[in-house]
Image 1: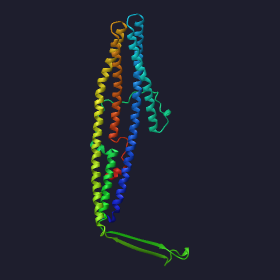
Image 2: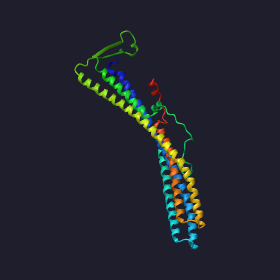
Image 3: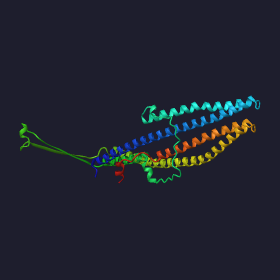
Length: 335
């Protein structure tokens, strides 16, 4: 019998400690995911910058061709104006993407606790992509690695322990204490016969006059335990939803990327052919503008799809509590 609920109080305090550990793990996981997300966004901005610079170069060539044909009296000045408009619009986006690269560089520096100069955004790299044909098998037990689930689990244990503590207060509580010591007129006599003294005492507490308030506290703790169980079940359901959402995001963007890869190749071929036909006087300049704009749109969409795939895996990382090692105290408590 847990006299006075001292054992239950100790269990509740230990469960609170486990909850704090899980809360810290959740913060660490979110920070890691924010760093990864900022890195993906920085690479996306660099990819868009490369796309804008590449298209500006081809649009400059189209502008030169239109200007040459205009000076030769073969086309009206409208072709030159349209070509220049398209070129300047694309060139105007370049400083915007440059600013985005620096913005995400500064964010990464802040998250990892260093200066912006220590993060080198000038070294270009592709948007990180997972291995191809990556097979995912996620058992339900893996969801328990989520810090949020472990924290909710610890709160259930704490609430149950406090409920047990409140119930123990309804029973008589016996306290036993005592003391033992030495006393003497001089230091050298300590330990001799007659210098020892001791006493003992005990107290018995009977909850007679405050039974009503103690019963109310039991009911309160019981309701708190029931709420903690509901929160725990909700955290599990939220974990399942987060995993399913992340997997669906990865699947949809992977499918989208496959189509955009084909579309990008076709758009590039169409833009090249249109520019060559216009140079030879076989096509109207409107076709050149349309194919150039289509190519730019498809390339930007392809870059966005690659970034969304990477972000989907980051979301999956968060959903599974990645990067957080379950402390040994949790594992011992599971037994």
